[in-house]
Amino acid sequence: PILYSYFRSSCSWRVRIALALKGISYDLVPVNLLKDGGQQFSAEFKAVNPMQQVPALKIDGITLSQSLAIIHYLEDTHPNPRLLPQDLKKRAQVRMIADHIVSGIQPLQNLSILKQMGEKKMEWAQNCIASGFEALEQLLHHTAGRYCVGDEVSMADLCLVPQVFNAERFKVDMGAYPTITRINKALLELEAFKVSHPSRQPDTPAELRA
Picture 1 (cartoon, helix red, strand yellow):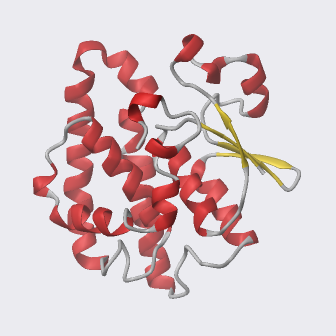
Picture 2: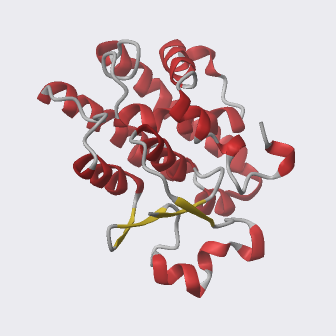
């Protein structure tokens, strides 16, 4: 497999966690979203992903984009360890939390939107994340065990950790979200989350390396 990734892309990090959890080795092709006016806009990368976004994964003779579509494929083809619970209610809760982050928070504060916000980008990102986290904190009161849904790592957790990383980058006050903070801390102790961390990627700038 070949993963097109950017070290600080939260969408790419979700997929890196899934690959690590499932023990799938891959080659990484860095796509720098800032350099050269954004390498994602190159003709070469547009041929890989017409949406000109990371991640993209070449695997089993196909090319997939969109992080959750990639993770679902990995789940279907490498079912252990599972990232979707067998219990149908818990499975629905996992998908709900993942969608809450992937559709309801992350796109509102991604690079393309922030460019358009100009000087207000920090305030905009903080507001988008805070309103999303306020709802997520309430959802987790009903679903959480050690992790987002019960005590097994799930697709929801793969979405949570990169989004908390974004929140910290944008200096969101995490004091109002004790459940999110607790779960994030527990997940960051797991090896798959450590090795996939933005501070430990081949394209991580030297000054940001762990």
